Length: 420
Image (cartoon, rainbow, N blue to C red; front, side, top):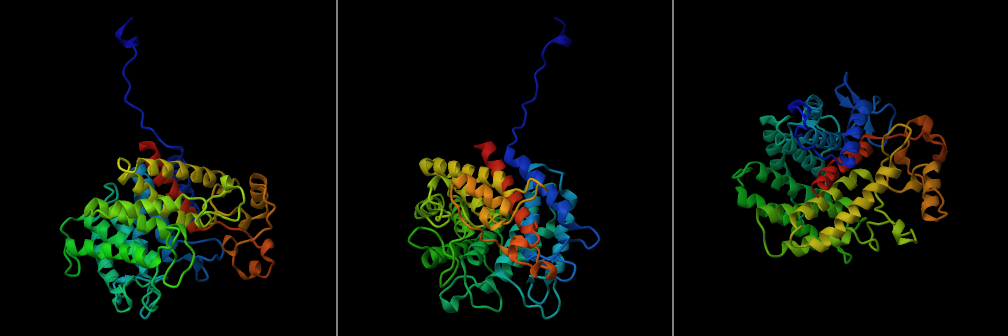
């Protein structure tokens, strides 16, 4: 046998998860569907619950969720989304208010005080993610993130016992603004060890983040172990549990204390318990119960559960195994049922009976539940012509939040399950 005909050694093939493949596909479809090159803005063809103005531009929250999906796609497949990320992150500056040193919900102008602390924490987290991905990193992203973190400190409501305010002009304190602020601060500490912001050194920054999660657990954790929405109650949305779980894991990495593992395990176990309120408890057969809220909150629960599974794989292997199994079951459900096979985009909600008659029939078939429809307006066009019709007849639509949330969910999961 000649040397040329011998089997030559081949380099190892990089394993790619089906979730990664789906996340990349959705990220591309999201960009081509919603990005307007002329306006340099994400926008919809028709008015939806997430858009503003006559040209249906998206507000900062879905805008940044979409960018976070692109960032995870770029991390997975470097070079694919480099230009798109640079372009869209610069477009975010249209929301920047120099008056506050923060980002407004809609385009900034003098006197626009519509500013949310959770939106701003999310922008900071996205900027730090961009800074830490070599193919898109720019020093200005770190500087902008520091500027936001300094603003976030103004939201801590010490006068009323702590917690982060939701909005600059409202007294509401909730789980998501408080937890995301803590995550933003710790991601900054991880990015630049020894950083000082607003006169606070690294130890003080970590103490602030610890205070955020302690307040959430002390004030908002209910008997089930889950986290309610805010002071006074509200639903136990998936992200209310996912983000503090992620925050606990970041603390475990940066400044561990003996109480953290038990707190994290309690949250993780509650999140996968199908007798508790993250699940659709009205479904009688427990094997057909799934998380009930939506894709754009789901991505933050998945992030928290993945963070937990990586952090405690060696010390809490039994719970980690159950978490991994449940995540995969939930992801199969989303990938199978929440996608629209017609255009390949994803709906916002995870409850099939709220979307369309077609999805209702699918729900009835696999659960055996003859539930009546409970259609959600946020899956539908909101222009005058559509709103004049009965809700069952209104035009259906996909949105940036739904697609961005789905894409990021799959991309985070793909990286984890390949490694797992």
